[in-house]
Image 1 (cartoon, one colour):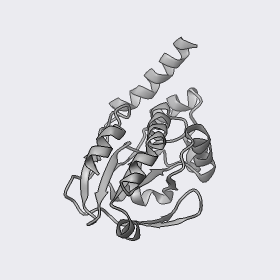
Image 2 (cartoon, rainbow, N blue to C red):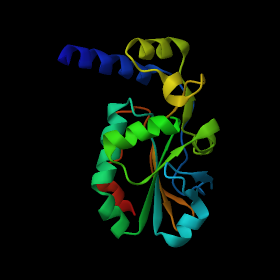
Image 3 (cartoon, rainbow, N blue to C red):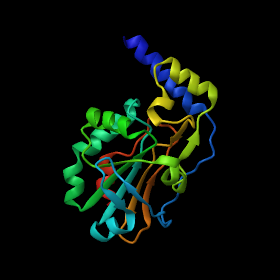
Length: 194
């Protein structure tokens, strides 16, 4: 079992060698606004959220099949009371379908807003989207990761799992953008930056 897990993580890690041009947005940039429905059917408008909250933490994740994403979402959930005590609203954006988001919630117990980014508008606006090459898609499929089923299309588009902290004025105050999907922004850092 351990050998299979290591093999799977190695294959998934091959995605690190893919070349993609996205660079993310930088701190000090105006956060692109958006309106979208979350997994509970609630309409989220970034401008309206910033009027009510001190900050918005906007993070991107690849899908319920990604153990690093699930771990990060669980960490956010475990610290959600600390974040909400600072009047912070947490949103996670993903290309996965509503059904797959349900699996993510079951795995992570996430009670914050999760958004299916149909058409990748939010991912594109925040410059985190990239398209996997066919060879990598085939390797993922060989290990039981079916992006087409998970995302409900044949685009093979995923986000760099970046995190943006957006302040009350609508500016990005802090960015974690690393093309190595294993590196995520620690909740302890988020708490010091909001």
